[in-house]
Length: 381
Ligand SMILES: Cc1cc2nc3c(=O)[nH]c(=O)nc-3n(C[C@H](O)[C@H](O)[C@H](O)COP(=O)(O)OP(=O)(O)OC[C@H]3O[C@@H](n4cnc5c(N)ncnc54)[C@H](O)[C@@H]3O)c2cc1C
Image 1 (cartoon, rainbow, N blue to C red):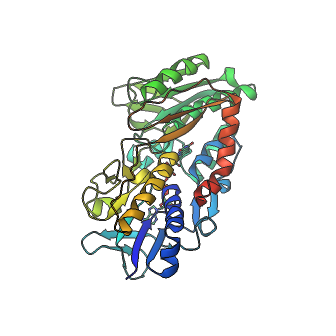
Image 2 (image 1 turned 45 degrees about the horizontal axis):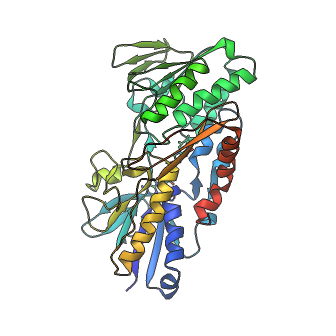
């Protein structure tokens, strides 16, 4: 009997996982004892961190995409289809196309996160964001025409993808306007929902003074409830109002309806054990990457480290051995801080990060990593 591992979602998490599994199970797959199936709803793999650079004219949405079949090991059976349901009793997934349901012995959910600006009234009409290919291209055009006024960068949705992108955007924007001789005509405000500039205390302590130094106003305890696109005002649950000329947001995020409907997590994120990545509500189901409800950030690096750990774990399970590999929450994020400088943070479930002084070297390392990502996704690095 062939033992089948089905992975849903060919983003960072799913792609790194199947390539690691293909390497791990090379002889078993060649003998027909193990089958690894990757299902993705698009033939393209998208590297979302590229979208940060689009508004500043440094990248295009096309730079973020590569054909998935070029990144996935030939031992992996790739299906381009959308999974519409998971039946954890009969252990089958169903598809949007008229394909027959597919049975699994082990199922890994890696469907990422979706942005839902429409959840906040007026946000989709009045605000812009860089969390999607069309949206980030639209923002590029807005920024190119924005020569004076109030730019507001507001974090509306928490949790959101990439813990630090909301900090990076205003810091890069500050330099970008300075370089173009416009900074004196542009005010920049950054807003965050809790009582400091970032959810991670040490990052907030690092970012607060840097923002002050760059003349970026920081508004905390700022939770937008609606946006008035005609008056160009953000209204908050705290009863505050903030005028803007250009509103950039981190929109609300959502998990997956497939997760909700399968009873794997009420809010669309899969309830998992944070170290084994096993679903709390079903046997032989795992989740990793952004769709997993983990006590770490929704970051590509977290997805990557979790995928390598789960590959080891699944290898043991499939071979009937006791699995020992565990994910410790390891996450590493570069932080662009403007002026062609960057720093980075490294942390796990136990250790808070300590941001270092930004440098040009780390900025160039981040740009270099973004290029080498395509090797990382293949499992080469
Ligand atoms: C602007 C921006 C900047 C970022 N910068 C960084 C950074 O600098 N560093 C960092 O570590 N992280 C960064 N991130 C976060 C990082 O991109 C995500 O954490 C990472 O992509 C998560 O990987 P994933 O595989 O879980 O999800 P994704 O990469 O989103 O992949 C999910 C895949 O599943 C597919 N899918 C969804 N539903 C279904 C379905 N029902 N059936 C079949 N397929 C489905 C999707 O089409 C997609 O291909 C950034 C994100 C953004 C938006």
